[in-house]
Length: 73
Image (cartoon, rainbow, N blue to C red; front, side, top):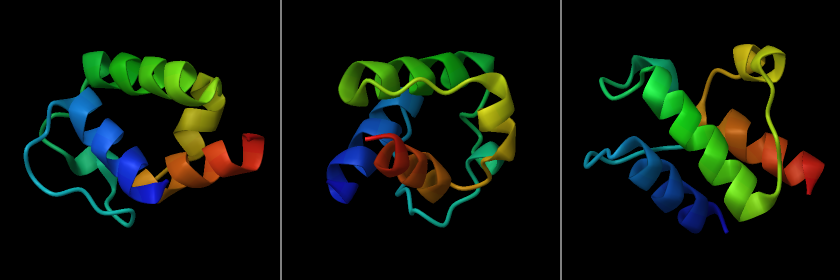
């Protein structure tokens, strides 16, 4: 499931470079307001998990998204 999540995260960002769970996603060149919406929509669609702005602010790494999904699933 982890590899699938990383693949979906990369697709939502339209990022061709490798993504690792320990990456700080805000440092990605592709990270902007449209990327945020795309990631949140993808997570909602694929995992039926909603992330609000307060929860998003606490996240630092790609792995934080993944762990949040696991915790809510």
